[in-house]
Image 1 (cartoon, helix red, strand yellow):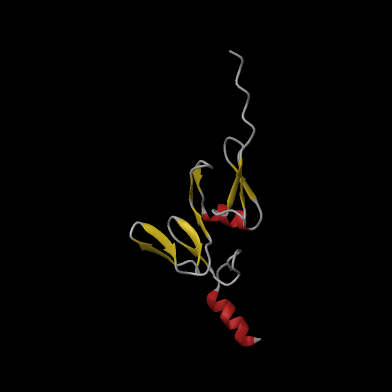
Image 2 (cartoon, rainbow, N blue to C red):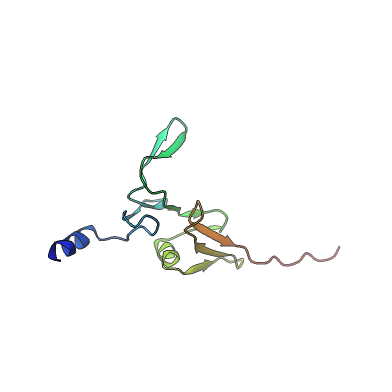
Length: 111
């Protein structure tokens, strides 16, 4: 039991919600799994790792950049709302691991 605890405290960090093996890493423009190992081959990016998990901070569809606190909230099952009422949630099934639910737009006025 002691050895197990030593490993946990040494590693620290958040376990990947997708593969359950990697630890989440923080980069300037994204949060990603330590098992995600992107490599640029020519003009293409390929993943030499075993996990695809990455969330980019700049979210064009959502209209803003995500802070660490935002990403932690999403991974904990919370959601974020933007100024237009659109909802952003974590989604394990999505290629981008996020889901935007757009608020109903106000109907245009009659012409």
